[in-house]
Image (cartoon, rainbow over all chains, first blue to last red; front, side):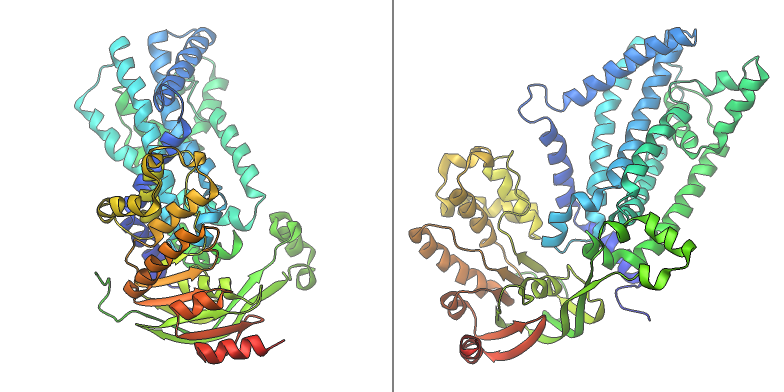
Length: 274
Length: 253
C-alpha cells in the first residue's frame, strides 16, 4: 500500500525544508557550543586548548614510541585528531540525534533534518575551533604547503555531507532499535585504533618487516582512512591520491542513496518511535 | 501578514488514524527481531501491541475557524492537536495541512535555563517559525508585557515559575501564526496578569487564520471559540456549535 507519507517528495522535502530553517539550527548550533562552556572564563576556547593538550601529549608519546621525529609525528597526530573528532562526533551524536531531541520532536512540527543540520553545524564549529591549533602548529612546525592546500575545503565539504547522511541513517535506525547506540559507540572507539591517526600509515607500509607492511595494507579496506587522508594530506603538504577521493565520493553517493530510501520509508515513523 | 502558499490556509483530514506501536524492551531490540526471523516464530513474537490513539478522524477546518476541543483526559485531545500540527502523520488515512503552524502545547519547550530571558525570547520565537528580524522587532513589546525589567538579562534558571510563564506567554502571544494550536496549561499566573494576558491571547487568536484550542475551562473556550469538537476514546463524538457541544459534553456522565 502506497501512502502519501512515504513519497520521494516528502523525503526530499524534509531535507530542503530543514535547510530553509537554517536561521533556527544555525542559532541553536552556536548556542550548543556556548552552552557547554557557559560560566567558564575561557569559554569555547577550551575546545581549542584541550585539542592542543591532547595532540602535544600524544605527539611526544608516540614520537618516542615509534622513534619518529617530533616535527613529523606531532603535526600528523594533530591533524588526524582534528578530523577524527569531527567524524566521531557526527557518528556518536548522530546515533542519538532523534532520541536526544525527543522533547522538541513531540512539540514542534519540524523536519527531521533540522536536528541533523544542527548537529553537523555544531561539529563544524568545533572543527573550526580546533583548526586554530593547526594554525599555531604551522608556526612552530612549518609544513611545505602548496596551493593544493585549498583541497581541504571540498574535502571538508565531503566530510560534512557524509556526516549528515550518517546522522540521519543512524538516528532513524537507533531510534527504532535502541541497542544499536551502545554498539555504535564501541565500534567508533575500535575504529579510532584501526585508522592511521596516531600511527603513520606510509611508514608502516614501507616497513622493512614485510609482515608489518602486509598488515598495514589492510588499512585500505578501512573507509575512515580515506576520509582522514583527503583532509590530512593537503594540510600537511603531501601529494593527494586520486584513489582516495574516488572512494570518498563513492561512499558519499551510495550513503545518500541508502539514506534517501530509508528516509522515504521511515521518516514519518520517527516521531512515533522516539 | 505573509501567507506562505497561494492556497488558502486550512486543515483537511480524512479517516486519519494514529496508531502507536508499543515496543517493550524486548521487541525494540534488534536481537529479538533477528532471532525471531531465524527461529521462525515470527507471527506471535513480532506482533507489537498497538494503541489506537486516534481513529477515523475526518475534519475540514478552513480559514476563520475557531474550534474548541473538549474531552476527558486521555480522550485524544493532545494527540489530535499533534496530528493537526503534522507532528504525527496518520498511519492510515490522510491529513493535509496548508499554512504555517504555531503549536503551543507546552510553554516551556525549547527554553534554556542557562541563557538569559532575552536570548530565550529569540530562541522560542525561532522555534515558533518566526525569523530573527521579526523577533528583534518584537523584543521590546515582549519585554514590556512581561514586566520583568532588568531580570531579562539574567539567566532563566534564576526565574520563578510565574516569571517563566510570563516570558513564555509574552513570546507566544507576540507571533503571527497562520494556524494556531493551543493546548491548555495557560494557568499558573497571578490574577492581574491573567487578565492582561487574556487580552493579548484574544488578540493573538484574532490574528491567527485558524485556531484549535484544547481546554477544560468553559470560560476560556467561550471567550476564544465558536465551534467545538468533543473527543472520546480517540474518536470524534460530536462536532458543532460550541454551546451545543458543551451542553452535550457536560450532560454526559
